[in-house]
Image (cartoon, rainbow, N blue to C red; front, side, top):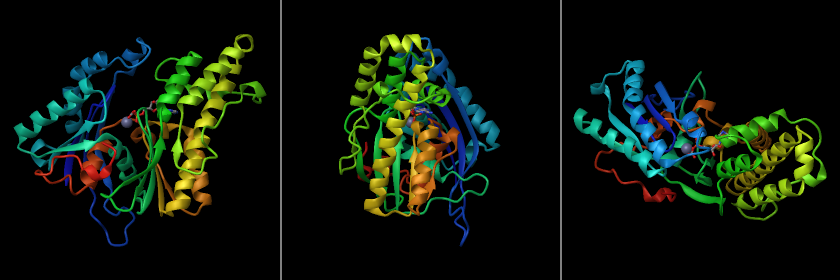
Length: 351
Ligand code: KG4
Ligand code: ZN
């Protein structure tokens, strides 16, 4: 089964062709996803001139990129339109202007090629990036706990099966990626903020002066809730009180970035491990753009291995927004592969 996936949620325009591998008795892949091509155009450079995402600008960039990106993805895959089983597209959540470009293009192609259109939830697709198999990688065994961390979402999900998902926790306010982006702006780093804070953190040297210590919000509360807006406020306060010191010591802002980076990672790891303790899954899956953060990736991997569970995270290219995960989601959810059932599945609970 082969699908063309299209992604246009925000500032990335993506198209990918993917195939579902057969279920092999005793095999490691167990029906995972093979990516035949994955093409991405990003308007991050254009948007950095504006200091962040301007929806109107992002949508216009989508218009310019979408057709060449799809054409290249088909060419690189060696698959002809008539060989496709379906066209899959992100239907949300995301910026409406950007989404419309992808959805309308996908609709037109599906109609012209006579193929079913499969609408995919972007956040669910992030999780399915963990089923992409490369270099003989095994696919996750269920039940699983998934931590979805992106620019707009921070959710803990329990997955007893591929289709029945339960939301078990998440942020009350800002998403982890949003917190990174806001912190970056406060510290004067350019857009895109998350990777810049992570890079500054990696370059930091020396101990943390006690006056730059940041809180770990809700870390000691016995629930799976999180909050990141207060952390950003605390950062801004620390910057105000230590303005002179930060200006005089050039490397100090990197130390502060490392402290922020660690504060976010520690909360995410602690709450995920609390969910592991509660639900006793076989696997723990990390997904979404913030999964590109090395402190989070390495820290969670260590904690999960210590708990005796299997840890999965997508390759870096499949952590941030991409079309491969959209195709993977369509292929992994057999209920999506039903041309009659085009409505999003309410049981996912995160629409
Ligand atoms: O999943 P994604 O590409 O887009 C959304 O669906 O939102 O996630 C983007 C988010 C942004 O907030 C970005 O700053 C953050 O992921 N991000 C990171 C890193 N790379 C991307 N945050 C922390 N460390 C990183 N290395
Ligand atoms: Zn995303």
